[in-house]
Length: 215
Image (cartoon, rainbow, N blue to C red; front, side, top):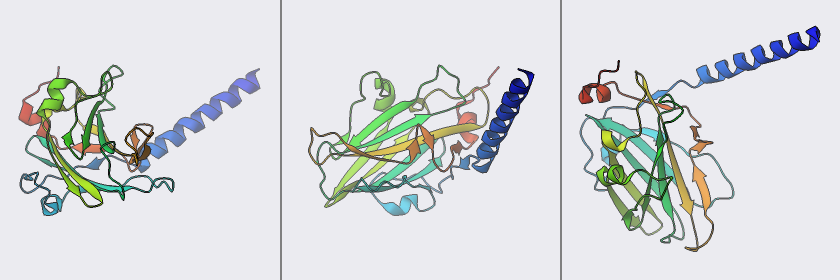
């Protein structure tokens, strides 16, 4: 039994070391501060210096998207360019924000955007109504796809961790429905709620602008 216990302990240590190494391989990526506030008018140049987010490859999904994220003053800005050969009212851009260090009881906030604009939050899993109302967004319909530009002020973000750094997972999912009532084909930059390229770190200026003093 001692041999088995020792073997099990050694395996656990090796596993934790591997997990630690994996975490270090993907440190949080800093969200860049934009030179000026985007106008949310569909102009791509406003997001030229923003950080690009790429979806995971999926051969089963014919649609595609690219996303860019940036920060200005106290607001998080996001642009999503989706390409879809058959755009329907069932096609959605879903944005989930979650601070993994905010505690086990902290939940993420989910927002939805479609060709008709920002959608109401889904019951139970969506962002609170007050947070959804605070998000400013512009949706531009294209011949084959759409562009979403959105601004997330501080109160639209989910619960922060008590102390710095402000590390957040920002998951963008494109739900492609060729028929409105059909089950969607999903394309996302996250797997299991975790960003494939590493989480994002928001500038410390966000907490400073709110004048929060954790105990």
